[in-house]
Image (tube, rainbow, N blue to C red; front, side, top):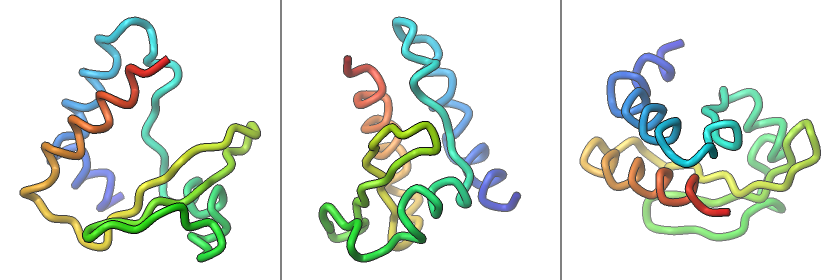
Length: 96
């Protein structure tokens, strides 16, 4: 609940609006709860790591419907990077 409030307060609502205002890709994009991401990545298992950056780690995940996805997990929440992350999500959500 606290993470959801943080997300809404720091760009989550903007992100949802930007994604839903696209060309119909809104159904392909959604915000997941932590438990769903943990299940998809086997609790962020090291064997699922696709890559690491200075601020995050990207994991290969499988959603409950069988879709394979990349899941980015930040090491810390840096408020100065929230805008950049939202822009990245919007860009990726508009890919075919």
